[in-house]
Length: 288
Ligand code: NAP
Image (cartoon, rainbow, N blue to C red; front, top):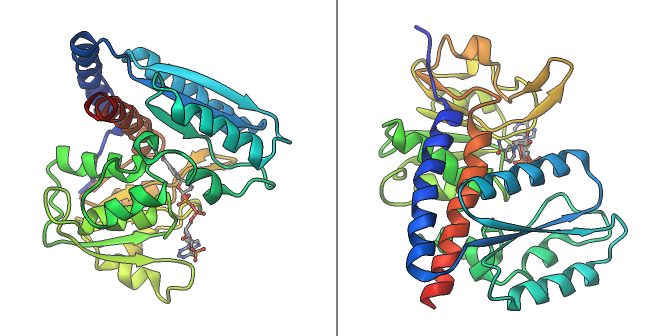
């Protein structure tokens, strides 16, 4: 039987419509327009597209976005100075620096310089610690979107086995933290695999929920999937075929119970959860 296709694009549109109403209500009640500062360093073509998408998404739901551009040669000090200004600016509620950064800039130094209350990507060590302890301020956008996709499609995680292939700070690790937390969208038994894991296929085959965040086109093949499992494909690989996920979609959809496509799966939800985090940041500012 062919899998249920989990339509991230449609769900993203639904959540953005909800957010648009919530932003309008918040702004009417408080006089505050949520504002996201987006910082782009250098001329990475993909980053340019991501940043433009984020700004357009903000505009559509009534969130203000401000763009700050630094040259490819910008120093870490220049970027930190900009953060100091934005951290102090009460009209800016969320700060996002588009990754990757040029080599001369230490990514973690920079991410830790954003005041945690404005860290809408949830990459600051304070926010990561809070997530780990189950008392988050913000949730990291990609895992947050995946959790929302599972919840809104009534895909149970409680008591289920989840396998995450990939242990990055952006996707794999926080995804594991979310799925193992107590409560809705959590309570799973989680295994995290990486490049040093022997027999990834055997672990993947045991998973009721399989999440691929590897960055290798079609890495997850049909023989790695438990029949009826939910398969979430985070991968975005630019190949001769175009944009391809980490999952061999055509073959795996015949085995899985539910599956996200690429494009149109996880990607649109990531930006959507950034919008939600920005509204949360504006509410935090108002309530402090
Ligand atoms: P990353 O930082 O490169 O991490 C990749 C992970 O995959 C690493 O933990 C790596 O293990 C593991 N890995 C690599 N080869 C492996 C193998 N043969 N077997 C098992 N594990 C292996 O990537 P990322 O930032 O997490 O992104 C992953 C993918 O998701 C990329 O395609 C990226 O473009 C995409 N992405 C999409 C979104 C979205 O919104 N849709 C958001 C973020 C990322 P080691 O740690 O041992 O090296």
